[in-house]
Image (cartoon, rainbow, N blue to C red; front, top):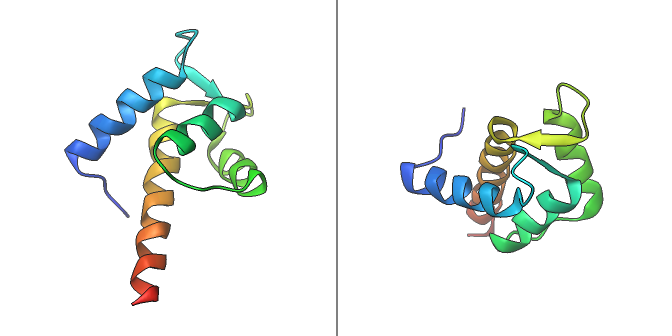
Length: 87
């Protein structure tokens, strides 16, 4: 299972808190898209919707921090694998 460094986790936490403007402890698809943009990760809407569906276990249409961390961990792992494939 992919892991994030403490530094990456801190960055993700700050990003999540920045996106969670109403302080609800969850972000919606729009805020998730903004988080990806902030982190410099290009993501198509369809990919984003699929990721959201994969981790939105309670069907709320929103992502709590643990789910957000899961999405980011998986995404960063995929990007790292794609980078390795380019070499």
